[in-house]
Length: 530
Image 1 (tube, rainbow, N blue to C red):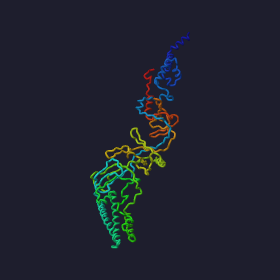
Image 2: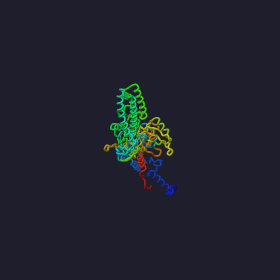
Image 3: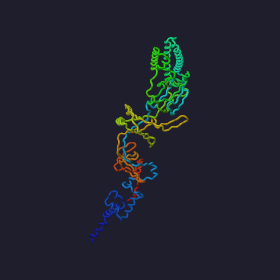
Image 4: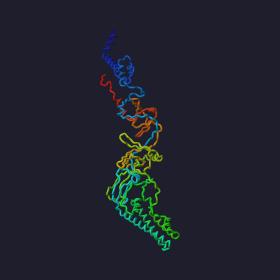
């Protein structure tokens, strides 16, 4: 009896009360909070899965509310690594997809560059052949003209050309007199009425006049007159008062054609010995004298007439009028610039490489590697130019920028052409001064999954791509082998399979959406006091 009373008193003591309260608190923590499960306390899983516990169903409901309505066919990825996108969301992100494939990946060294004219080829300076006044301008700035197109008309005020034409006409008149005299003396000498020396003197004078005429012809050609104009002077016996300046004609080696480089003699000017024999009608000593005269005339002409060019072939060329330096009515001097014509069909890209890239450039030039050039057209658009070759490497490093220049050939094309009356105005696709990036290949990875750079999201050391699974995109961690400003090479190690559809744009936005989704959940117990 006394022992029973002692036990009752012990249970009623303050110490027993504190122990009971402590047990109640521990049981409450197990039953009514998620602390045991979150901290891995013993029996937490058993209590949560106990069938007779009233809170078990509620706990399961809380855990599955967030997954209600989701399709769990995309096994292998947790819900935290998957995001569902509506059609509107994909449109807002401008999301595009592509099937992953295994292909070679070329690694490039990227070097800044700028489009520039080809020195000595692109620009042609049109100068005044003589002193005169601009009477008409037949072209406009920005117009495309073909070789041989009339550009300017000059009214002559050049005294040297006037004097040359006068001397040419005088010599023509004297030549006519000498020819008639030779014919008269030839008929008389056949009867022995006069000495043969008289006729020989006249033949010498004829040869001298022929040489003088040829020298005058060359002088007029160099002053800007054409062969047709000189022949017109000979036929009409009138001076030329105006000169037309034409667009240059090019040879196959891109050199400029000039009429003085291909001398042609007008009809009625014999220069060979056979013609002189026919004029004299005699042989023997008279023939020997004529041969000496012919030799003297030929030597005289050889000092005046330029040899025929080794490249008479002409090519069709078109030029853009890039600058006009004169106005109508303006007086110009011989050699003064009138206009600048430009042929933009072939340009150069000048790259500015670091000195450490010189070996890479040399190897690319030696093996004639195909280079790329990337030109930005806007915020996201780019134009890629393939199949470029290095023309030559610079031989000096810039002392200020420490850059090594190199030059790449660039074939141009007309992107727009409009006809205004009889004038054609064009716009070339590539223009001097445009900036771009030159990509020089270094090595090739044969087996890699190549995706655009925008398809890979970064978070610390991790790299992710997003694989499409119906209306979901699953985040997949990948191993990046190499990359540049355009593409990324991913290891074909089973994380990303060839044939899977991946998002090739908007990977960063998808990564941010997944992070916001995982970090933005509302704590169901926030504000509860236990």
